Each structure stands twice: as structure tokens, then as C-alpha cells.
Image 1 (cartoon, rainbow, N blue to C red):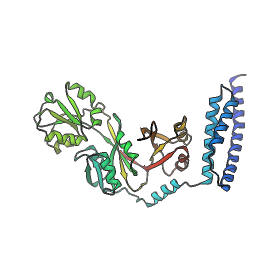
Image 2 (image 1 turned 90 degrees about the horizontal axis):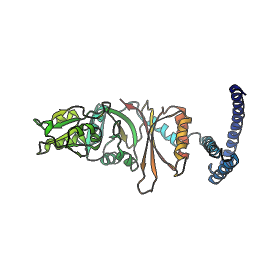
Image 3 (image 1 turned 180 degrees about the horizontal axis):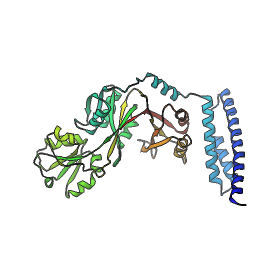
Image 4 (image 1 turned 90 degrees about the vertical axis):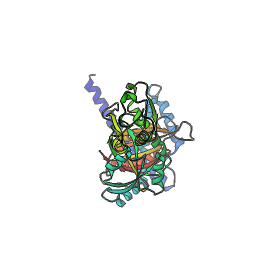
Length: 380
């Protein structure tokens, strides 16, 4: 046989498989109706395990693993179909629609906003990019920002989430597990680090540099080029500039923004010292009350998955089957739970898309715990 003959045989088999798949899904709907009538749960773990084991055994050693993967996916699709049939509109979808209805059409220009650090911090610059007018309250820690929003002291909080050079801000992801909040917008800010020191100080005199851990990580090559110079981590790049200005020493400097030079009376010894020119930090704007503004095309969720092979794959396969783009995946260990992780996902899809509604209905059944963090747009 030539290649075309073999492909024709494959096409014929695919047609038969498709008809059988349709027949199987139709019977699955009938099972769902029966379970609803008799108040039975959709998932029967024992039957599913037994069925998968038998099918894998029947397939033989060579195809055993492929068969297990295939029928595991088919069973997941069957359960999703049953869930959609029994609950056409999920509780989460109802909540999202209610939030959309209750949110004004325009993002507010003025608000009381919580930021970490002091005046001149990059968080303040991100805040200025989000709000044309704002009253900023500064806190010493990221937890202070979350707490201020959680307790109603500030309507919004602005927090750094990830940097294009140094990666994710892990403390933020850890705090996400602790607090209830909603992401209402994000902003991407170009980050340029400048070496600031007291006026009259020479670059050769610098023996210690203050800055935030992320800024130090983003400027490692420059710091190495200075020779025997100590890098000291502090809470914020603006605080580093403040510490430099208030220090009695003349051999200290700060990695900070150019605006901090004027703000704290410092001189710029070196400009744009970060390792990469395209250095961006993504900030999120959080609120206590859910808000979804028009144009929201990004969604953030958190999940705790079953501690067994294939759990993450099943979630990723669902994104793929719905043609939803995954733009961020982060995992963090869960406190007080041995070797268990929380997974954070950023998805790119419009909240008005039918596939978004279908995804929100399906995901809860794929995980042990599910948390919807919000849908929003990003300012660039």
C-alpha cells in the first residue's frame, strides 16, 4: 500500500471513532439525567479507576499508557459535559455576570491607594499610571498593602507581581493564599535603575549599595563591575534612596529611580544600570470588592490540584482544547502542607467569550480548591 491508501484507512477509522464518541457522549448525558433524578454525584472514583485499569490491561503492554491517557481525557470530557448539562450556568459564572453588571463602565480616576515603600517608589509610579488622581498611603511591607485593602482602609492596592529580568515576586504569591481580594487591573512599567549618591561623591568611592532585592538581581553585572562593593537588601528602592540621603557615610549609594534623585537631593552617578534594557515590572491593582471593567481580557486563577500524576496536565489540556492562551504559570508551596503546591494561572481570553464561560464551569471539577482572582485589562 502507498501512503495515500494508509491515510484513507486512518480517515475511515477516525469517522467510525467519531460516531462512537458521539454515541458515548449521548449515553453520558442520559447517565447524568439518571444521576440527577436519583441525587447521585457525577464522579464515581471507584468505577473510573477500575474502568481505566481494565482498558489499559486490554490494550496490551505496548499501548497501555496511551490507552490510559486517552480514556482518562474522554472521561474528563464526559464529566464536563454532564456538569454543563446539569448546571448550564455555574455559580461562578453567575457571580462574574453580577460583578460585570455592578461595575461602572469607567475605571476610577481618583481613589485611596495602598503602596509599599515611600514616595518615589516604583509602586507609586505604577499607581500614577493607573490613576490620574490618587491619594497614596504607604506601608512598610507587601502584607501591609494586602491588609489595608482587606480591612477597608484603602479601596485599592498596587503591588509588583513579576519582572522581565528577575522573575516573580514570590512574597506576593505567598500572600495571595492568605487574603481574599480581586485583581481589577494590571500595568506594565519600564524599570530603569540609576545609581544615586550624595552630591560630590565619586563612583570609585562607593563601597555599599542599598536597594530592593529585585533591583539588585536586575543589576548584577553592573555591581560586579564596581569591584569590592557590598549589596545590601532593603524594603524598597525609594527607601534605599532615603537611607542614602540620611546616612552619615559618603561611600554608600542606592539603586533607585531617577525621580528619587531630585526627591531626596541625590546625584546620579550612573544611569540605566540594569542588566537588560527591556526591563519591565508588571504591577497588579487589587480591591476587596470584585470589579470587572469593560475590555477585560485577562483572568487570574489559583488552584490546588490533587497530588497525583496528570493533575496539572488535565488543567493545561482544558486550556488547549478551548484554545485559551496561558500567559503565566507559577507554583508556590502551601504552608503547613508537605510537598503540596498552589498553582497560579494568568489566562488571555475575553470574559465575553463563550469559551471563557465554559472554562469557568469546568475548572472547579479538576482541582481540590479553586479561587477566581479576577478578570481585568492591562495598561501598557
